[in-house]
Length: 205
Image (cartoon, one colour):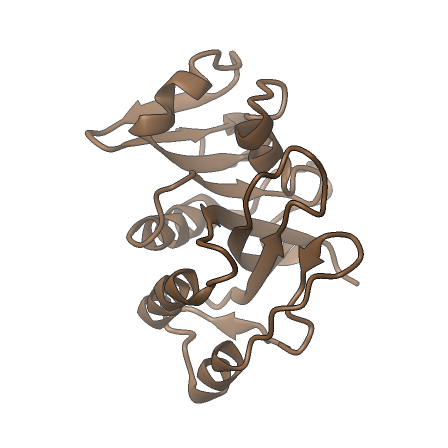
């Protein structure tokens, strides 16, 4: 299975009601140009089933990879639910809404840096996610970083909060992120902190 990079965000659920989050994710997918009748049908048929490890994987879904309005590079929608059955750090059900990207399409493995124009693509996709989601940040991660951002928020673990290469973080979470690693850069607006690790980008900001 190819290595995957991930644009991910998280929302707390009201019980097991995934519909509000799914509807917001569908709006994002429509705006970036990947929404289609097959995806709509699959979203409508998502079934809640908590597995032994505490996750809801929605294994009945088989979302494919699609080109967006922004690039020939394809993304794959992904939805996952985290429940209190996972461990004691979970008091509620949470959903993650993700855009998966095959890493080989955006990263040069010879030097570890992302390819030309990847920075702008990721910024555009993250911005579209941010139009609907602002409970946590929207994080761009590789496979090694995947999910650690959420662990950091949930457990207030400052060693895990900065496990991403790029993120938009709502200003309401600013106090969590006051201890910035030296190699990260930040731009602030009225509502968001845009932050990234320039070490991995060809287009350093």
